[in-house]
Amino acid sequence: MQHMVVNRVERTGLRTVPAEILAVGDVLALPGSEDAAEVTAVAVENDDFGVPALVIATVAGGRRVSLATGSIAYLEAADAERGTPAIAADHGSPEALVARIAQAHPNSAAIQSIAGRLARGINLKAGSNLQDLHQLALALFIDEGDTASALSVADLLADLPFDGNFGRWKWIEGGLAVAAYLTRHDEQRSARYSAAIRAADDVESDPLRAKTAAAFRQRQLNEPNVYDPEILRASTAGKADVERDYRILRIGVLLHLRAHGGSETLSREVLERRIAAELAAIGALTAQLATS
Image (cartoon, rainbow, N blue to C red):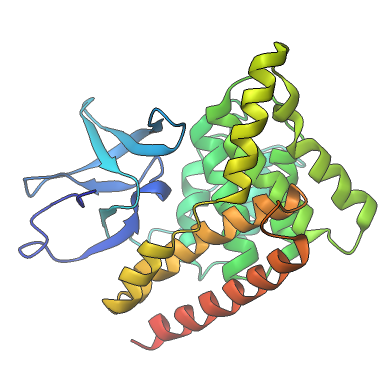
């Protein structure tokens, strides 16, 4: 698939991210022009085999921009000096939790950016808010090593039931996977998260459709997309930031597989080792970027 073209030679000050992690509030450089616009909605369209194929970003003004999965999106550099807006929130509310986390990590541009978007109010039925909470949990876990806060955010997602909307469910599922890993030394609690992540597996009541869905799901578990080509390309090109973003996507996949108990090709023990290796690789890339 071809990467999105945005006059990358002429434009400066852009940062690159995998199309799959575009989020509401990002300022996307538009193809074929010098313009950029804020992303107001993000959706993913699957191909005929159920595999994510296109990321559809709706930007301010209503324009829809299509990006192939595995391609690169170009964003205006985040203004880390803006800080996080004050959040007027009730004690114990999701907004209050995010505000406390933002205050504890004032030097993290990623956390400040996500918290700034969530400062407008958290609607746990809005896919964009669920995506932000999922990314916040990952940033706290992977970048900051703040596992307690990461679990608190993941629990906001883990408490939500499957309601038949797979667009929202993928972020809830991601939160459950993070929570299952972070509580891995508490077998009973971790098992509850793992059981909840399978809530969508048994919703099909028609026996034939259920059997077909189970076979497809098992194939996805056995042959997961762990972004090998994208990571290799980024590493070969010396693009540490892009490689890092794809490795974070890979960790999300590995956490999901682990929460499912592994698969026929990847045991939980193998997944544990691979997750540890990815965390170490991301740590090395983060250190490299900090000194470059």
